[in-house]
Image 1 (cartoon, rainbow, N blue to C red):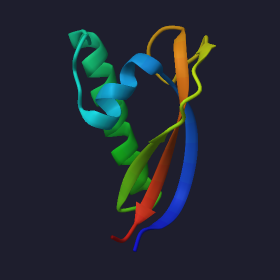
Image 2: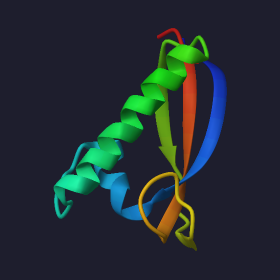
Image 3: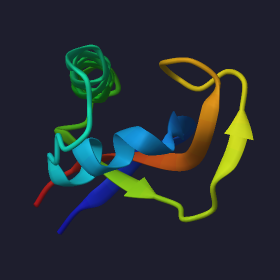
Image 4: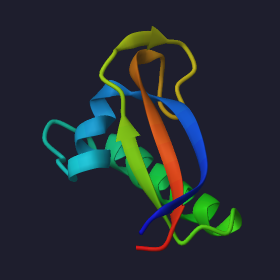
Length: 88
């Protein structure tokens, strides 16, 4: 059984969700893929730093324009919950 140790919600560019959730690289540039990979590495490091064994990404459907997403340029974004979990 998974136990949620912590949770954060971040504004992530909508163009990145296909790759972050489903590993779909369609229509992404090498730079965009690198930004996504760096984000996933940071999620793993943050999980370890918070004493969690892993993390789960949970995307919200509502898009909105945001000037300061967690990575990249101002863009249409979605809220992405990063759940830091133990067990399972």
